[in-house]
Each structure stands twice: as structure tokens, then as C-alpha cells.
Image 1 (cartoon, rainbow, N blue to C red):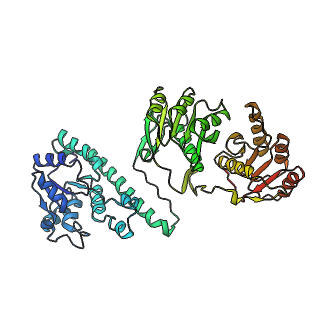
Image 2 (image 1 turned 120 degrees about the vertical axis):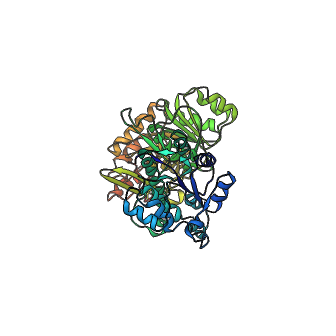
Image 3 (image 1 turned 60 degrees about the vertical axis):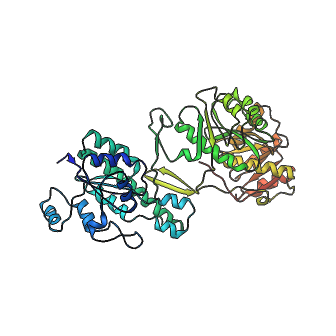
Length: 508
């Protein structure tokens, strides 16, 4: 029958939160309840009668609780097909009672791994009985209801109330789908834990939290975010984050992480920095970042790695921007910035972790290590007769950090504490440089003594020739071209310094 009245239930859960209303419903509808250990005690405290699983199976919980429910009388009660005469006959023959509802959750494996527990403790949190019960009940959804997470308790309670303890086939199929999501997610995290050392060439990704976005890159595209934004940010103000907001926020967080121990500010548009600066205060860093491109900053994403005080908030309040990210805000600053109701204010709680990047492509997926390498002065190899000064080295480090986070082909021009301009995402490096120089001039920057960073090598000397003409004194680039000598020779002939890192930072 499509509609089935629940007459018996097996309940064995790790988390008891919000289970009370369900117990009350089952008790009121005279459902026979089987349970184990702590769950049995909890149910009895609610005034409901419980049959211990040990009484049904004839076996106690053994091996330190590793084996409790793994028994034919439990799995037979779940898996036997009620419309199959042979199954029903065997159930009678072996005194196996039907179990119509299974409520079970899983040991907290993810949480145990995240806590830094020992491997022995982690292994003990690999659930065996629970995962088996979930799969068995979900497989036999035509006859059995499976609730595999406390997240579904409310839905089950509603069904029990509204349908007088009965469920439809559609209900049971829905709960089965939810259960397989729980079990597949669980197994994915276990595999990924083991694969940290085994390096089996398999990609397993599972995210249980899904957030529907207003739309994707464009209004005709549907979009979702899968992950836990609340673990990373507290949203203090503003509308819901959009797909494009999230892409820009990701780029902003990655860029600002390069400036540990400094007071930094960045303004991004379409994932590229249009302003970056370091200074003694957030206000000053913002002013310098904004000065780099006062046009592109309109509607941008702003980020700092320091507390936003009232003086900084006043300075940036007149600008229309989509998002501001900071580790903290003074109360007065927050009150002022909240004056625009759609302005998104994010308090960043932690740094982004993870060492992998994944992207759909063609009819598959590509995966790579994140670009976590950042060059310092010690990584520079001077290849010209003139070595950069200490000030120029600091400027080259700054420029290289920004360059790493800018779409290729790119050229970045800066001093040691302020991005002057960049040529972004051009099809040739010469075009990127010319774009950068022209843009710097339009915003009134004097490039005499500025430095230049390139995300990849120069195949010809044309870029250093153009840079010299603009007044640039020092260059950082990966090197590696068969024609590196031509660029080096030009720098030597014109008193420029050049360092090579040996590390390319393409960003597509």
C-alpha cells in the first residue's frame, strides 16, 4: 500500500536534540519502540515504553559498543518486503518483527577530525551500525521510513501530526533520498581523511549546506553556493550575497591574506584589484587604495585586515560599494556604515583554509593545488649589473603580491606601499603594460622610480624598453625565456635592475 501506518520504530541516535516531540507523537499513536543504550534511557525519561534491542536480538552490546544492531532480527525487520509472501513467511518463521520507522544518526566523524583528535579517536567515530541501518531502511523505502539526521526531525513530526502516524510512498522516497545524501556525504569525508596520506587519484566532494543565490553571473542563470559561509563570515548588514559578490569576496580574501602583519586595504572589481595599499592606519590605507582608480572603485568590493574605526568609516562612507570585509568594526563605525541598508558588511572570522582548487571544465572537472607560494626578498635572484635598493626590493615584493592575484596577462606598477595601476587580463604582455602606463597617467601618478611586476616571463625586450621610457627603475619577473638575455642586456644598458623568481603566477 502507498499509505502506511507506522506501527513500530527503531531509534538509536547520537544527538538527542529536539527528539522529544517525536517521542510524544509515537507514544500517543501507540507505536512500539525499540532502542539502545543512551537513547533507550532518553526515551524512557519521556514516559514512553521501550523494548531494548538486546531483548530482541538475544545479544548484548559487544566489543565496546561496536556491535549493537548488526543482527538479522534488526535488519530482517527493516529489509523484508511486506508484499513478498516469501519474505513475510520467513519473517514469521524466524520471529522477526517488522520495523516501519528507523531514526538513526551517525557518529560525528567530521567534527572529530576538525577537533584535532588522535587517529584512534577518529577511527572510533567511523559509524558501522548506523550507516548500515540508514542504507537498509532507505533501500526498503516502499515499506520503511528513514530519518537519518536531526535536521529532518521537524519534517517527520509534521507528517506524524498531519497524517495521523501514516506516511505516503512519496514521503518515504523523499526521506530515503535525504538519507542517501547523509550516507554519501559521510563516506566522502571518511575517504578524504584516509586519502590525505594514500593519495588515491579520485576526487570526492560533498557539501551538505546549499544556499540558493538570487541568480548567477547573469539574471538568466540559476546559482547555488555549497558550503558554510557562516563559518567564515558574520554578515552584519546588507542584502543577500550574490554569485558575483561571492566570486569577488573570494578574490579579496585571498589577496588581503598576503599582507599579514601590515595594515592593508584593497578594492577589487571583477576579481582584480583596482587599488591596494599599506599604511599606518586603515583610513590612510583606504585613501591610497582609492586613489589608484577612483572610477573603478565605484560598486567594488572593499577589504581590510584591520579593525575599521569611525575615522576610516567616515572616509569610505561616501563611496558606493557593494561589500566591505574586515575582521572587526567599532560600534560607531558600524552604525554609520549601516546607514545604507543594501551595503553588505562582512566580519571575517577566520582565514580560508584548504590547499586545492576545483573547477568544472568540458565534460569533467579539473583540480589543482592552490597557488600558495609568495616570493620574498630572499627569493629574488638579481640578474642585472645594478641590484635593486632595499626600498625597491620592498616595492617589488608588494607588486609581486598584487600581480599574483591579478588576471593574466598582467603587469603591475607600484611603489613599496601603493598600487599605482595594473594592466589586467590582456592578450599580450605589451598591451597589459601600455594599458597600465596609460591608466597611471590618467590618475596622476608619476612612474619615475616605480617598479614593475609581471606574472610571467618576457619573451622579448619590448616590455622593459617601454617600462624604461615610462621611468620604471626595477622589475620582477619569473624568468625562463630563451630570450631572457635580451631583456637583461637592455636593463644593463639603461641602469635598470631586474630580479627573477623562477615562479610563474598565471591566473586564468
